[in-house]
Image 1 (cartoon, one colour):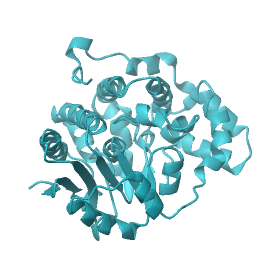
Image 2 (image 1 turned 90 degrees about the vertical axis):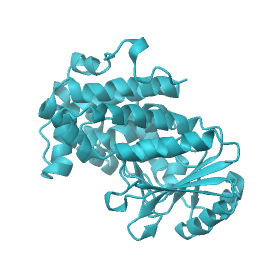
Image 3 (image 1 turned 30 degrees about the vertical axis):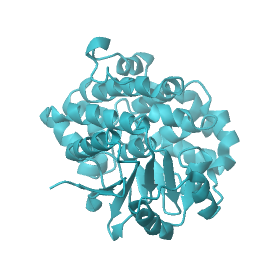
Image 4 (image 1 turned 180 degrees about the horizontal axis):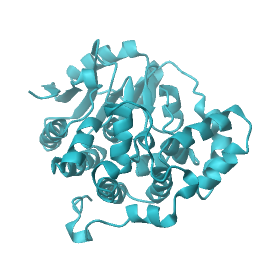
Length: 356
């Protein structure tokens, strides 16, 4: 049984991610089902637009997608399951297709939009947030990095907001998502069902029309833009944390405390990822990230890897006490970081070599 529901109505393809108990976390089956239907609709001249939403625990909307199925990542990494490789190759290919779909794609980003959910939503041509949106790329909390094109779309946030969001995993509201370029409009959640019905009748909304219907909401994140730019422009993670810990403001104290809990090694990797991604095409960024994610699971095999340990602490044993290696930001060396950026394959054999 598929975890996505699909309908074609009046020339509009309607997709509902339907795994609400897991906040629609993506499985390999979901990635494959979604890829198959989007490929069919992309090449069908009778389909004029696509809309994607998530099923919430109380019904449609309420949660978009919490990311990839990290429990599967943990089990597959320990078991040497080759489907782990397939998942990331196929997920990144799906994200690339959404970005270049060639027809309007409308993402209903109500509720949780994280990780793999961001990979899908950020490729949409119309990204609708709400007052209930909780958007983040929190991967450093599990010893991973903001993948699915995170280097590309976070790197294009204003100033050094991308470094801040990538390193801290800060949760962004709908209004703030618009402010930093990760959403196009904020609607009241009550407006989503009528808009979905309108799409099912064949009417595709424009951004200007939705902006007129949206309630103006002031975000707060951009108030910290000057401080973020000052600190997160610094050349190294050690410099960033040192600057924060020398600052007695509430924002600096809280931000430093967050960074001290994240994987020290992956903080360094992420800073480099975002700065490389800022100047990359989407395809090149996804190819870089595909190499990074393979190295996350293979540079140190099994339970010794940061990602497996991070998932264990958060979602398996739930002790919230990851044993990071090395344990402190100051102990990470340039060689440790450089190893993550060494390509696991020659260019002609890269699993994403065909992305344009």
